[in-house]
Amino acid sequence: MSTPAVAPVSTSQATLLVAEREVVTRVRSKAFIISTALLLVGIIAGVFIMNLMADRETTTTVAAPAAVAAQLQGSEGLEVTEASSRADAEQLVRDEEVDAAVVNDESSPTGVAIIALTEAPEELLQILSQSPAVELLDPEGGWSPLRYIMGIAFGVIFMAASMSFGLPVATSVVEEKQTRVIEILITAIPARALLAGKVLGNTVMALGQIILIVAAVAISLILTGQTDILGSLGAPILWFALFFVTGFLLIATMFAATGAMVSRQEDINSSIAPIMYLVMIPYMLVIFFSDNPLVMTIMSYVPFSSPVSMPIRLFFNEAQWWEPLISIAISLVACVAVIGIASKIYENSLLRMGAKVKWREALSK
Image (cartoon, rainbow, N blue to C red; front, side, top):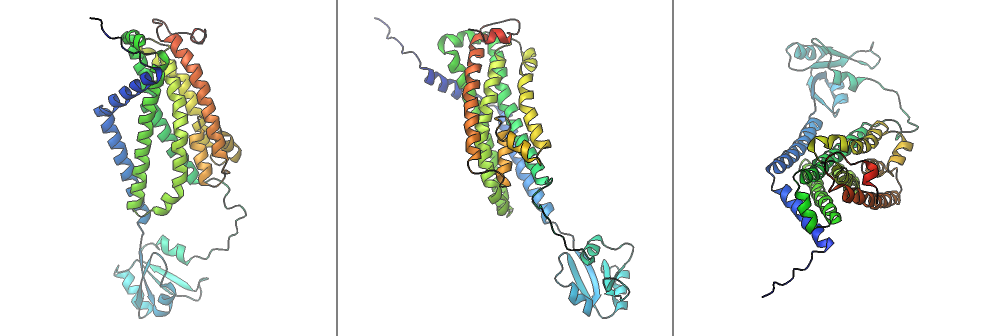
């Protein structure tokens, strides 16, 4: 009795099988679950702490005669107690029932004087100080701390995801070569399918973590009543998620290709070092030149830095509606080119053991 022939697995089916294996392996990892949970808890706690610090207001208690008290009523940060006379207001300060007293004083440029026990409250001085009118010719120009914070936030998230999900692609490839498992896998699965599956699976996991982070931030902002911030950050965050996919595809593919060029875990760092520089340098430029329109515009079209620079430009209404579409198209073209080169490197290096494969050998054929 003859055994029925088993139909060969297609490249697409093999890719999905490898991707599924990558996802299942990572999801079942206790270290991954714990680290993701700690990350989400940290983000939620950070949003709540920042909200508490922003909402915390220092109230300065003040005693003042009726005429002065009427002028101070309604001033933000002041709690005014009406005193029958200057002497009574001064006595309240001595008894430490109020932080300071504000009384009439014709010799003062403002018409009032502050009476305090040891030191005049800074908040009260600011309220009573006279500031000249200010006219800004370029209110949107110059350095903005929000730009710096957004650059760091988007950059750190992208770098953390790249290291968390991109580096394991390289280490798994080296591990399969070192244990000779790759020689068995390659007889059943095409090398391109193995590469595509690893990249696809880790991209799905990285994007899933980004979605969880976005959801955690959104829920935290809603619960703390900061819906205005959520509304302004909504579009940039969605663009960041979209740009993240193309950017991570590039990085994960290059990690897999360079990982295939070595056969020992000890050689991974030297192999992936060029990729790390290629990823880190553009983000450093975005952070340090966040207030430079020319650099930010250029960086918003570079695939490795566009996930950070383009959302920032969109948040500050500095980019036209068509610019992110052009940038995404450039990133996709770069993905196709890099995947083609990486596939050749991966196939030429996968079964070569021993010394590190040279770039000329990896790109030959």
